[in-house]
Image (tube, rainbow, N blue to C red):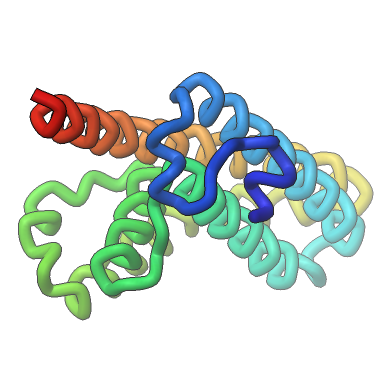
Length: 187
């Protein structure tokens, strides 16, 4: 209902997202990413004023903004996250957004309890490098406000763009299958 109201999309369910033209979904996804980037920049600038004292809450809120962005992108492209498989897909998308190649671990996707902790470990390792950049920038509190806002902005942009590409590709694959099924039923 939020998607329908906010963006005027003619859908009544997440499955309805497959009937919306991809360029329309791409536009909505870009709006979500840009909105999240602005929020992350404002949050980083605000917490940046506190220097090193506020880095933990800054990083926590940034993680929340980033994961919420990935979730919204998932929903825009018609992917819910209610079942174990759907949750695994969301974590796989988050790993993809972090630039992590899961390779053979995807073959073990049916073992969700093993897969998600591995993904979280790899995301944490990847994010820790970006955390060190933010920590170093916090040594000068006033300058760290500008640097914190800028780093947050580009952090969310990078994650958002990679998640967007992941969900768009998955959406197009599923959309193609749905169209093929509809054509075979009409023949």
